[in-house]
Image (cartoon, rainbow, N blue to C red):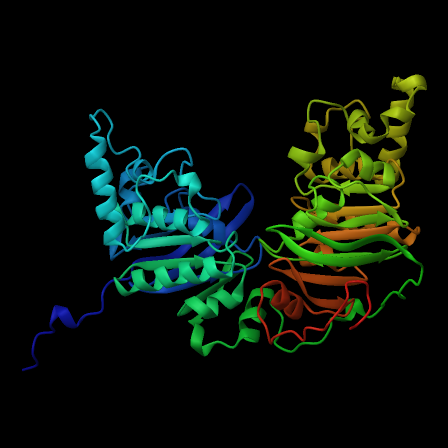
Length: 521
């Protein structure tokens, strides 16, 4: 007679097991029957391009979103009831890229925040309990220090210790290295490995695939709201991981739509940077964009590409180097001077940086040219309407008229108003940061066509984005990783090689030397 199985021989239940999860937001299918299993003591990576469904899955497993169907279990037990904050907090916690600690409170106060409702707080005892808690998880931080004085990774350690003190054995790390330097990343990874040895499980979300190979033992890939791959990291070549993310076959050549390569323009640079740098964002960059050229600057989170765009247009002041337009220096950190120098700007966030929502289409489209709409600094409504009607017609902005508030426009048409404002002065150089974010496919094609036409008419254009579709219109693309140009591609790049460079996966793409000016080194 066979012996009864010993429960001690059974593998422990997964720290997290999600199965068949479906989530819709209105007509948008954000998760299409996906799954994910994270074992105790495991660092499991979840990767995918923007819009793949990673953030939605995190929302589901942390209790922020109620799934439309599917199951979620922690340690073999069903997830707490939706809305049971204490129940979810005792199972799973999320450490976000942006620290959630309160900087003006001490470490001890942050650790025990919201735990003493109606109780009298004994401060000495609180600090002793905080010291014991930090020591238990090996976090070398003074419990009496202000959280705002800590290094970034120390604040993350405090958040992890707080989560573990509630009983959570699964920690979601959402881009935890985005604000860390190399030493900070190493210290963080060392601490994570120590906690893994104690049975703590981590779900690791990162745009930097090299970190997946450095830290994780398993990886799951989402693409277009579906789960397309789960594998052991050690058994998965980097090119196959990139291919799973993009849908390309490993080693596939350039697609046929790139067959028509535009000739390289030979005019003198219109927009140039020399040794341009911004501490903590990007290192010294020498770039040159010629008239008739669209330069793409590709980069994932924390690459420094958005900061570069904001520095070019004067929203941020460089710590070194200079920007010139047609050889004339642009005053650092001055938006008005950048406008006067001939730089047009399409910002990343049209709602926060691009539009005045309670103002009309006409008023928004003419914000940069109000001095030209009437004598002696006045603004004539008739000229404003006339100018706006011209822009509405040329950009095919679907509106009830120039007097309609922009708040009533669709996303694509609102973005066209932002583009109209950027083009109002006839810029010598156009800088566009993620110009098609949040717009439909038809509007996306139209907007990118406008940027292409600006260059074809003789101006210089720069598209800064991590969206591959934005970059397809470019004549040349630079890939940034941690503030450095790591690769340059002409228009024949493939999705796989560009994503590999953006994600810091060395050895997948052939990284060629470049001086940032279209010349090989």
